[in-house]
Amino acid sequence: MRLGCTVFICVHRWFHFVRFAEGVGAKMRGLSDLVGKLCEASVQDFYSPYAGLDWPEKLEDDAWYFSPELISLFGSEAYAHLDAQGQKRLSFHEAVNFFSLNIHGERSLIEGLAYRLYRKGNDDYTRYLHHFLDEENKHMVYFGTFCVRYAAKVYPDKKMVLPRDYAPGEEDFLFFAKVLIFEEIVDVYNKRMAADPRLHPIAREINRLHHRDESRHLAFGRRLVKELFDRHSPGWAPEVLSGVREYLGDYIRSTWQEYYNPAVYKDAGLPNPYDVQKEALSLPSCRSRHEQVSRPWLTMLLRQGILTEDPYHDD
Amino acid sequence: MMTEAEIRQKLREWVVRQSGKIRPEELADDTAIIEKRIIKSVRIPDLILFIEEHSGRTIDVEQLKPGVFRNIDTIYRNFFAVKADGPGPEKA
Ligand SMILES: [Fe+2]
Ligand SMILES: [Fe+2]
Image (cartoon, rainbow over all chains, first blue to last red; front, side):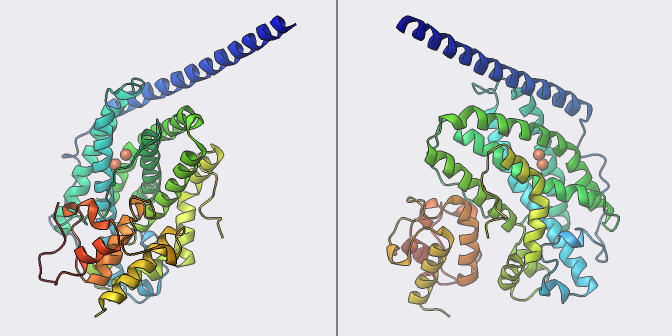
C-alpha cells in the first residue's frame, strides 16, 4: 500500500514536472517565433534617421506641434486663459518636453539593452535586442535633432537611480515592465499626433516614424514581460511580489508626472509654473486622460495578474 | 523668504505625504529616508521639483551624488544652506 502510494506520488510529480517543462518549452518557442518575425520586420523596415525627414530651417510660430487635447494643461484654467497664439507656443514646448522624455527614456533603455546582449538566459531574444537597441538610437537622433535645432536644448532628466538589492529575476522583470509602460503611453500619443492634420508636418512625421518601430517593441515587450513574470514571480517571497506591484504603481504615477514640466510652462511664458503644474495634476480631466490612455495596457497587466490593484479605482 | 525651521518643516511634510507610511512623529531630520526606503527612487524627480520650487535654484541632476538625499539634514545643507551665488550642492 505504502509502495503503491509512493509510486503514485512519484508518477504524479513526474507528470507535473513534464507538463511544467512542456509549458516552459512551448512558451519559449512562442517567444522565439515572435522574435524571428520581429527581426524580419525590422530588417525590412531598416532606415536611416539622417534621410527622409524634411527639417525646415526655422519653425513658424503660428502652428501646432502637439495635439491640443494632449497638452498637459488642456482643461486647466491656465490653458483657458491663453490666446490661440499662446496655446500654440505652449504646444511647441510640450513637444520639446515629450521628445526630451523620450530621449532620456531611450538613453537608459539603450544602456539596459546593451547590458543584456548575450547574457546567459537571454539567448532566445538577444538577436532582437540588436534591432531594439539600433532603433532606439535612431529615435534619439531625430528627437535630439528637433530639440537642439529648434529649442536649443533638451529638458534635463530629473531621474536618479539609487542602488538596491533585487530578488532573482526581479531586476530584469522591472526593467522590461518599465520600458513597456513607458512605450505604451508614448505610443498612444504618437499614433494620435501622427494622424492629427492640425500638426506641423515635421511634428507629425516624427510621431509617425517613432510609432512604426514602437509597434514592434510593444509586441516584444508585452510577450516578454508576461513571460519573465511567469518565470520568476513564483520564486519571489510575498513581500518581494507586493514590493514589485507597489513599485510599478509608483512608476506609472511618476511617468505621468513627467508630462507636467514646470520648465515648459515657464518657457511658454506662464506665471507661477509650479502652481500651474499642481493645478493641472489635480484636475479630474487630467486624471481621466491618464486613465483613458492607460486603460488597454492596464487591463492587460491586471488580467495577467502582474498588477492586482487598478491605480484609477483606488478612491 | 522662508526661515530654516520653515523649510525643514516643509521638507518633513513632503516626506510624510509622499511616503504614505511614516507618521510625522517618527520622522527626524536625520532619519535615513532613502536607505529605509521611506522615499523610493521613483519619487526623486518630484523631490527635485519641490526643492527647485522652494530654493529658487535649478538642480543639475547629472552632477548630484546620491548621498545628498540621505535625510532632511543633507537636503537642507546641500540645497538651502548655500547662498544663491554660492558653491551649490556637493558635486559628484
Ligand atoms: Fe523609441
Ligand atoms: Fe521603443
